[in-house]
Image 1 (tube, rainbow, N blue to C red):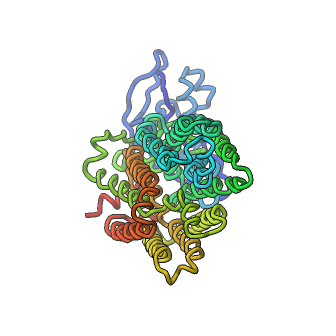
Image 2: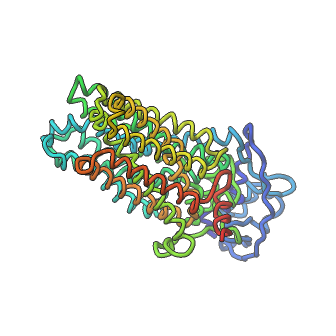
Image 3: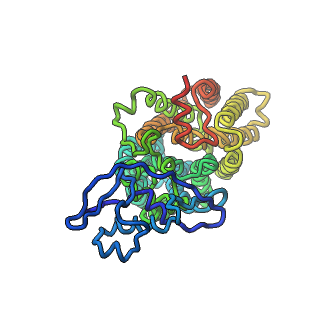
Amino acid sequence: MNVSTAPSSLIARTCQHKPRGASTVAFPAQRSRPITTGRRGTGVPLRMRRGVGAVAGLGQKMPPAELVKRNVPATTRKAEVARASAGSDGSDSVTKLEGNAAVIKVIPYVATTLLGAFLFGYHLGVVNAALEYLAVDIGIASSTVLQGFVVSITLAGAFAGSVVGGSLNDKFGRCKSFMIASVPLVIGGLMCAYATSANLMLGGRLLCGLGIGLSSCVVPVYISEVAPPAVRGALGSLNQLSICIGILGALVAGLPLAANPGWWRQMFLFSVIPGGLLGALAMIIPESPRWLYKQGDTAGATAAGCRLWGGCTNSDLGGDAEDGGPVSDKSWAEVFSGVNRKLVMIGFFIFMFQQMGGVNAVVYFSSASFREAGVVNDVAASAAVGLVNVVATVFSGSIIDRLGRKPLMTVSLLGMALSMLTLAAAMTLPALASVKGVLCVVMTMAYIGSFGIGMGPIPALLVSEILPNDVRGKGASVAMMSHWAFNFIIGQAFLEANRAFGVATIYTFFAAVCLACIVFVQTQVVETKGKSLEEIQRAILDKP
């Protein structure tokens, strides 16, 4: 008999070490039915059930030497040895980390994936300060349309990346998807750094967008699947924090531009390093156990669970609640049917509101807006705004698992709306003309701070939490399509809309969108704090 994968309940018992902070999880005895089969001449019967089983008929705690003598296949022999060492009572037990030990264990793997989120922010923010200077060097200084394309073509590429990202995520897994995403990130960064024409710059920006679109579908999904439930909100917020750090890094990288107008080439060159690291490190981090289990690789899923958590139970792998078996991916038609359609559309609309609330108008064009308001050092003011974004996101990560997702999003949206209305007033009311510059900087910081505590980190986390295991890849892809589509609209239309209607009118529109989103959150979004992914699914299904 050739056993392709070792039984999961037995492989799990190879994780017998018990680090500090660990607890022992006991497995119930596996029910099984005998299947008489085996390699010719061995007469070794096996009890197997959906990839979970134990070797039977080999005696009680048979020594490894005896297994070899009986010509038992290596994978079966390894499983029986693990069974023999599980304990004198024959019970199943694995060592599973808890508390800080569990967090420390997964942090290095989460940190690797966050390189993708960092590049997400970096490539969005790099044009904020560099656009004026690179436009002169590549000959598009007189064309606001081409300058707008330099901004928005990255978003078009990201949309394309998110379209295929869900299918790649489901087919090849999380780690291989990161490797694939790193290729256009590296090539695109090099093309932008050495661009001498608009076509080369646009091609490089398109490839960078493709890479961040692919990675943006994978980062929150991977984090949600490997993070312990008690800190999933905090670890999930690291995705947005890394985006903020990327934006801030791009703004800080642009500070030498005033003295060295050609510095924008180095700014793009910097992005190649994290892009290459993402692809290299993705080859050594563990694959998501849930994805492996979903593919039917129970032994691989259990081994990955041991690396991530010290050990795992069937429920940790996302097994079917009724029979403990893996579930297959849904087709696109099934993704948009029944309860799945509602959950996927919640993700679609929450990202639509996030983008139409105006955040990327601030990220892309804050320097230009500050210049219009009379701020002397517009690049430094934009960098300060980026710093506020980082601080607010850190604060959000410290409270999200205590206060919950819905309250933080509500407070966040209210603060964003009030900040936008104040900015609109500062731009139009003559009584505020003397303090317009100060008000613009302060209220932009207030807006970004409000965004950072809720509407920044929570949507990607929430989408990964509410989507079932069998639609998570494709559902996250749909959510990110919404993100990039509306992000593209803002990036492409803002400059022309500003000329046509004025920035005050646009900011008032953004405020109205934020207020509408409050109603959506209160009526459509479920609270997910402190629940396992399976508990969230049960709560959604039980909800009338």
